[in-house]
Image 1 (cartoon, rainbow, N blue to C red):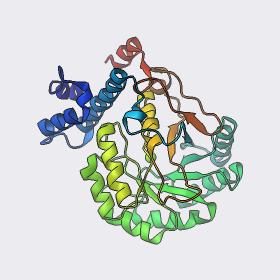
Image 2: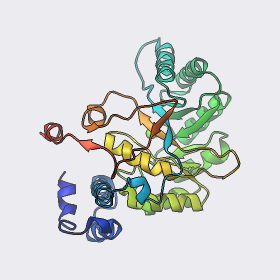
Image 3: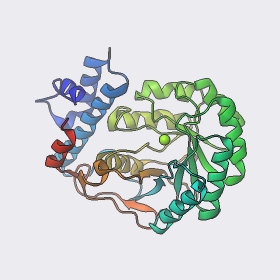
Length: 321
Ligand code: MG
């Protein structure tokens, strides 16, 4: 909150329609100390708020301001299947995976990072539960060294994994590159990276098949569009990392509705947007409406701005120390 208040002083009283110019003002005034971390997230928050205001002023959804949606709904994947303790973990994960199918999801992502043998047992159980045709991704949250990540990637190849997310430490560009060269599974990452300048490292080092900027930290929608342009120019696909609040989900939804998947072809693939399923009142209670999954997809809001309302009283309650 202090970061938002600090950066807000540079834009209060300015015209929200000039959101890219205001982004530049905030960035220039703070770049000596704010190119990463919570201050970059504060800049992102203000930028996303400006897009919301701009949409409301112009009477248009944010996706229209971004240049127009390519689709009216976005395919989502369930993020869940976190770790639990106990010998029946594979069975519990399989039950959770079946629950997501029953809820209408057609793709999902599970955690790995407990060690190769345990990860493989868990992935096997989930894959058997959801069948061969449901896209399944794995996320290590940078738990592994290059050697471990390579061993896991090879062990998981028979299970048809859509992508291996954050296999190694976010600053281990050489590790990312070598893993990507030696693994048959596409490599994803970037949720800990900031601004175009940060994503440039991941791109030029050939670290990724799929870049996952978190729009609420990586620089907002203004910088997010630049990150998409940079990545796709270099042949890297983008699917936003999306976690934490309804605002984050709405922001990711608007951007994802505008994205193409490379390479373009007759039966083009569609971007997949992350939809976290862990219990979280910041996501489910703070904003309305609640986004619903139908046949694996979430409809893009058609009202002006981001299309979510924040419960201000509840926000004050959450923000209280
Ligand atoms: Mg992740």
